[in-house]
Length: 239
Image (cartoon, rainbow, N blue to C red; front, side):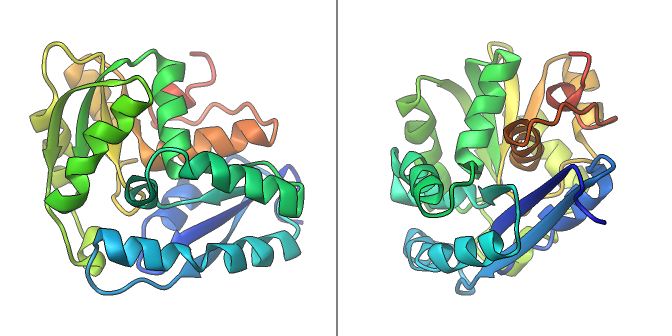
């Protein structure tokens, strides 16, 4: 039986080709993921994200019908488009309609930063500049200090999942500055599992990525404490 310890339900943008394979690689024994998708246009923009989010309620109902234990809204950019407070409202609506615990990509990322003790953040994203520009204000509204920001400026949604690991590694290196407590890589459709361990070793500071934080938060909501090798300090069980 799959998911005999925990079934994680994921609501993700239709273009996302990364989060499922990354989780398949990292999931501990007895943990399974189940996904539903929200259609989005070809170009990533604030407007397309707001339109996409209108499909979230359907996805939540589908996952609840599948008998999942935890629900994740796996698009951080939606929280940037909708603004502070949307993530909290989403979690509460899921709780009221399904009785299930939930999180969003943004909430998981910020809680992961707090768990590691990162207050001064060097931030890297793959988002286009129009979306990336809102990230600093968003995170600072939750009491983080963003000391550096870099973005790749990818606007075509199908290009997100095609960014090679060496580019993601370079993004983190470019974002890092001396005064940062750690580096945060935003977006659920960029591959980070291949670079987290080397980044933490080379930068000599912790790295939190959105998919890494989602997995950590979802496991925690399900009462699972796991040590996942090569996935960074956040998922190191002996931290």
